[in-house]
Length: 418
Image (cartoon, rainbow, N blue to C red; front, side, top):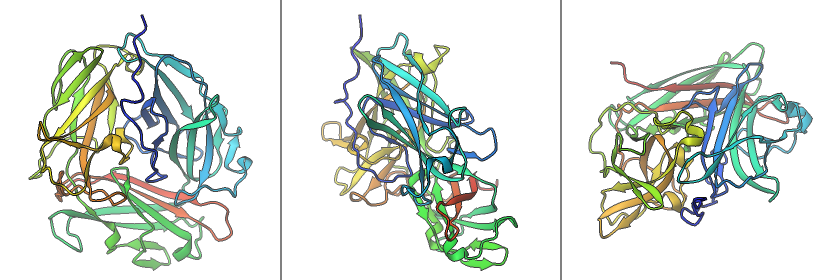
């Protein structure tokens, strides 16, 4: 007997685009999007030209009904606007950038039915020829509708980036912020004549597009490069270590969980009640990432089940803004499906997510009003010791050129020296 699929009404999606730089799932039947560089989870989605680098992409579509899915490649500018100046033959080394996704498999013995799709890029059919920003768009060929947008980066070896983090910032000392300093040195093979207008940089904290700082002004421009030393734009709230839970079996709860139980027709997991952080406590985590795992089966891609996970936060009921659960599994999206709602009966902020078995990092972010930059201060707290991850991207937009080259990338973890 076929088990019913999860209705798309259970968890509605908001299609308001906060940033073209983040993954976007445009179909409520699609879940657990993973983009891994060279098969490594918790990796940044970039490939380097003329190397064997690849992106391994996978996702689940609820149900066992076949859907004819394809993907196409689109070039973007350094600030994530569509680049309509390039011909397909210019930005692709081979192929037309429009291919079917042919690797799919139905879930096996799961209470929630799904079909797992996967593919790797570049591949023998499609390969990029230029560096820069791109997006991979998965679409339903029958419905002629886009269902997933995946931004990714293509790097060329054009410059050297060196960076460091200090907790002695221009606004406080060993308190609640971290300040980034970095230097960009173009290689001799890449002469940049107008660095003020031709060089752009972008910085992110913990891979979150909502934290991105676009094109901070360099403090010094020298014959050998550019330096960002005392930029106020590069002072980041330090935040706190991510919270985490481990849900790798249906038999019992794991780290961060109260229980996991069967309530016909689905499994439900209740996490331990969270509270706002008053102090910094070190915890080893992965800065918001998640990893699919099922210790009772050999192939989690198709054998791991889905569970309704219940988040609960004890916080003041009279907050003027909204609290959102946030992590890589939310795609850094601040829509109603991730908003914590206050329950006057339990006196807790609550939210429920349908998640596949695995290990998850998450945090709570506060947004004072719609469109405002989310804040860690109100729930997570800001502590200078936090081991944040920073990503710096440097672009060269040569005068007269029709595309923006990604010439350097630095992705590193900050940790205080013991």
